[in-house]
Length: 330
Ligand code: ASP
Image (cartoon, rainbow, N blue to C red; front, top):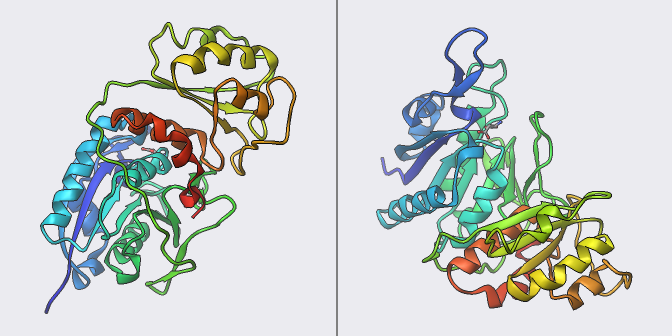
């Protein structure tokens, strides 16, 4: 019987974690073949090629490592995979999904998933999430949608999704827009049509450093004022409300924005920065005058990755255009 080819890579994370000894805490243990064994039904759906690319907690994934995952995934598609599934930790899933989406130059779906409960916990969600992710990876209606995150029966677009709960089973949401699709009785349903996607070239340079600072009440300017001296190539600030800073931070932006790109995003977790509402010192109109770019709907962590990639392919000049794209809302 003809079965399509599906490629799966495991990077680590809770989905692969088990405790080695009583009371020791869980660590990445289960390799990709062990994950496959937890979803026997998959054999009836696809020919699966599975690789273990890492055994890491997702906090320790790096951009360079993700570029090697991208290289692996590109090869799988070139060799005939109709879709690619990646399992990893959920802590940074929203970031890795966006990073790969910005570079994924195929119609074939790239699907990321993980688990909130380890393999040995009662009610472990890893097998269900993996099977769902594979269904999404195999579905024809997933084509042209770039990278997506599948968790707890929902499909989220890479650029919109965020981890918004630290331990709950329903840990992922796409603020404002909601999930782009659902799995019902094993069938993949989409709620919105695919959007036009822009893809960046793979960065030639990976040594750039982009800082991410969060504004908080009555914060000092020690780190901010040393950003240039520390050698950073870009700065993202997770600012108050619609993209606001206190006067002392705002004044420090002048010198920094003359030398490196500065992005102002909101720390609210949902919603857009403003551009033409507030006129006080440190308000968005003042920060724009000082040379900062407003992130719009782009979440601060994703804005940092976008800037890192743009610097890496010498396209910093396109930053404002990329931040304005509707893709962050689909
Ligand atoms: N709690 C995490 C997870 O869900 C650990 C990690 O991100 O690796 O996988």
